Image (cartoon, rainbow, N blue to C red):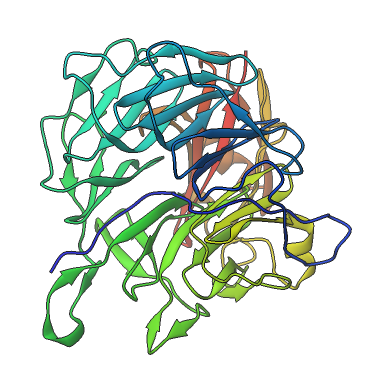
Length: 426
């Protein structure tokens, strides 16, 4: 029996936490009273979609919310189902296609009328001019020009695409048939479900993937007792990654959502609240003040983490999470680390701080990729030259030849692999 795969989604109202309240979750429903089914964040705003398809915006970190109008452009009957953001552009999946929204300017274009007609979109991702939308009928449609022209993948699954996520390894797709990966801009899609199989009760099934996120690995949250899995690129399979994660009736809590702010990776569970990944690659519960332990969706913005639950949306400060004894997420070996580049976002040069074991410099590589997984920069020579002199190195990356958008840089050594996200602005 197959079980469903989903991507970052939400359900039910909204909540917040004042930063001066140490390690506490609190909630706020001011302006949003319906069930929240999706959330996204830009630099200055947070967006929430309710069960009825309405879109709400908060410009004060969740304190107050106002409803955004989606009338015009023929959108009067559109119901938003999912959200994704990149550099102030918001793409919204809807029951009849994809809508485009400019942060602070409103709807700027309708993108759902194309060669293949209107689709019921169930999941969505964006990077620069590229938009990827998973549909209810099992196909992935994509655009390379901000939604003006659409294409459909040659490969179609027999079930709804409930989760879609762009990482340095490619485009991950989650369905009831398992996990899929495309590394060539959706020209081909490969089944990468190895390791997600469940044999509970002697019955073969695939754990339903509820969310994806990239920390120093590609992570997948699953339902039905599977917990969290980490993707192993070399073997193209998933390994269990559940140390410290809570259980119910002998099975891991369903992991409904994953979120991160660049250094802390969080897992929202169905019944166990929120868990945060520590420096020792174990999960610690971070639930002080949280009374609703069913986390449907999460999104982070600035120093705050928002969690959607059946009773609304909760907010907690990142400082509170760190103050509750949760360490920032780093590899298990202290001398192998990749820091967030600074400044970020940046225009021109940025600095990447790297720490390597004594014997790793000659075998290490540091490369930069776009959101399609295409290499756009190789800093390996600079890394190895610096590594011969000391364990820690400050690597300078110049973005002159890159367009504005999101990129990833990956450090690979004998000790493991770690990636971070960077943003180029023009």
